[in-house]
Amino acid sequence: MSKYRIAWMPGDGVGVDVMDAAQIVLDAIKLDAEYIPADIGWEFWCNEGDPLPERTIALLEDCTCGLFGAITSKPTDEAELELAPELKGKGLSYRSPIVRLRQHFDLYTNLRPCKAYPGSSLNYRDDIDIVVFRENTEGLYSGVEFHPFPQELREMMKQFNPAIGRFDSIPGDELAVSLRVITNRGAHRIIRQAFEYAKRFGYPTVTLVEKPNVLRETSGLMIREARKVASDYTDIELWETNIDAQMMWLLKNPDNYGVLVTSNMFGDILSDLSAQLVGGLGFASSGNIGDKFAVFEPAHGSAPKYAGQYKVNPIAMLLAVKLMLDWLGEIDMAQSLEDAIAKVIAEGEIRTYDMGGESTTLEMAHAIASKL
Ligand code: IPM
Ligand code: MG
Image (cartoon, rainbow, N blue to C red; front, side, top):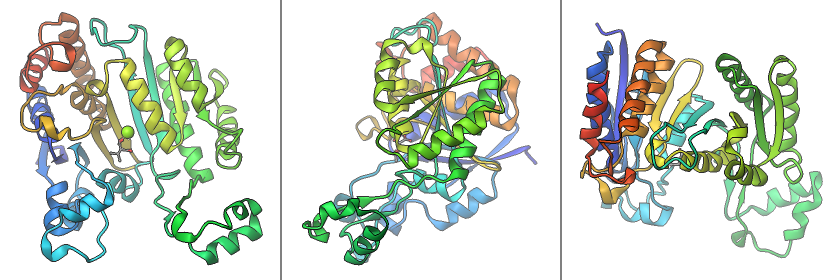
């Protein structure tokens, strides 16, 4: 029996291409694992009305962790149109499977390292080493949304906060509301993870990125929690910044920042900017990590127009494999994979199209595997 059972979820589009690249590297590194294919993706939405079928959840519950490629998602109306005829008009609604996985398995940490590897011409600067800790289960992703907005709810809310009264003249069907839900527990555990990481890898600061001057309650709660956690780490300084200004500062002085921690939606935005500083989505990996389970993925989407062409850069996926190896405690393997990736980038001979070359996804994977 293998040491690990890894759920294998290529999903859609280039998810398949980059997972083939992951397989090449995992075989070369000889991880003692069994890879178990799991159904997830657009095809299961169209044919079964669920892109993340129950059997996949059950399979994942029986695995050590999961590796995920990418998934296609479309706005509600378009998604409905592609359903099999017998599933149409049944009120099925598409919800992003990766968001569901994060919430179902309570994978509250979204870890997104953005490091500039020397030699990549795509680096905005070569001295960037940013790690985004994004809360992954609540905030604006909680799914507590209303449209039309019920009159009863409006009346009730008014008793607690008159601000909603400003919209009294707007009919319910012309009013959509999404709640940004932040809990003490949610704030605490993501901030704790960020500080622990800073401590382990010697980062002198942790920057909490929020917007407390406007989102007084939710960002306010995050800040109070951050100050509490920070008091346990006397060697690490807590910086508090606003999301808007932070985006500018990241462009101006990216080398000032190391560990950044924030709520779900801000983290989604901040991590794309951070990824672009080090070469874009072809370099951006993501770990969805809970206390007992985790799912690793590249941060890019399924890029349907490149599907099956083996053209996209697999480095994001391979860096996600590196995160997985770290999480499994296979620290030496993780390090040698990162070193191999860094070497291939530094040599500059094998480059995918985004890096200005013509190498394929699998040529990149083989080049990296050959350095292991
Ligand atoms: C990401 C993606 C997802 C998100 C989408 C695909 C739902 O943008 O992982 O950053 O918003 O979290
Ligand atoms: Mg995103």
